[in-house]
Length: 425
Ligand code: ADP
Image (cartoon, rainbow, N blue to C red; front, side):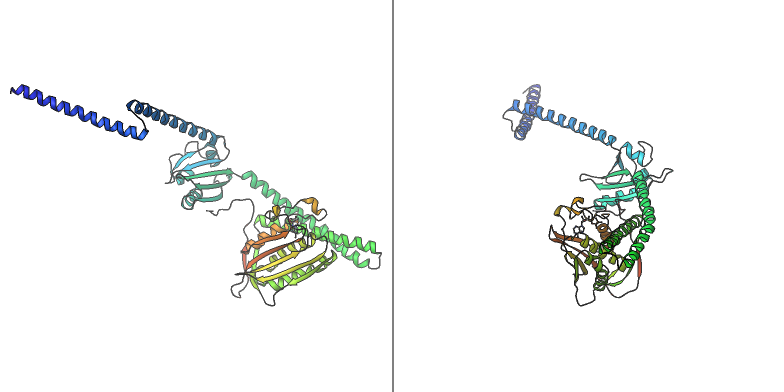
């Protein structure tokens, strides 16, 4: 055969092979697309692929809009928002963050945390959150203004860490003013109240032969002055706790003896209000490691309330028992009880259950919060069990003393609405 013809036929075969190869692979690709999209024929495949592409473009557009809107929202916030990548490089920071940290706008993005914040404490908080999930802190910005800033850091469920910063300088300043005011006021009130108290005591002695009505009035003055003294002492305690000047003087304390002697001090006060005082004490020494005066104060606060909120008389019982690794002390009263909704809140500062139900028996609403602070700073806890109209039992625990030892002083950290530097997980 003519070599030209052979060449032509060979070329034709190769071409047919190539074209059918493409057709087969296209056919397979279309089959796969038909499978994936559930299409019935080639036209349907084309339609569905177009729809999928449109959907993808719409989703991309929506995502961009959400991103845009979130960015807009963060600029509306007065809180500083910073996002860090997993390697703690700043990915995003809103204008408020620059203002709070006193950094030049835009200067933090793309820099590692330490370099961006120029503050090891912020970097430390972010690092802790990256490791443990979350961390909080409060710090003073190193600058002329020296703003006080709270930083809350949370590891993102997606990646990286979010920081939320708030300038709380004004809040802290107002808190300081309030604490100083309470401190000054209580000091000023103390002297006249002590004088009235002494005068009432003297009057009570001098009026032994006076008519019953007069003696009754003098006794009421004594009771009310007692309330006033307690309120002023509580206000002073609060301001000391808040300013961080409270020290625990730890010693070995027998809770059984402490409960007995403290309650005895209030026996007269209780009996005057028609209440009997009873004890439920074990016949043994139950030692805790604590500050005797402060634990005595907890008991006084509980007993005072037990008397105050038991208007119909009955028995107040003071008990002590051995717990697992602690000693449980409790005060039971036959009083008005604490409604279930208020039980969790009565240990908050200034919280009082409906004022109307205890008219004339109002206090500062501080007794229980001080008690909680003292108990918790001993490593114990305090709680209430109560049935409305039938009475309440307030109990608190203090860890048992390990072995007899000497006195040590421990500084109690101020409690308040501040965020502690401790991390929480
Ligand atoms: P207060 O100075 O008002 O007694 P506390 O902090 O000691 O402040 O108590 C807070 C509130 O808890 C009280 O105002 C009262 O409503 C409620 N409460 C405390 N103890 C008792 C109790 N033994 N029985 C009933 N209510 C109580």
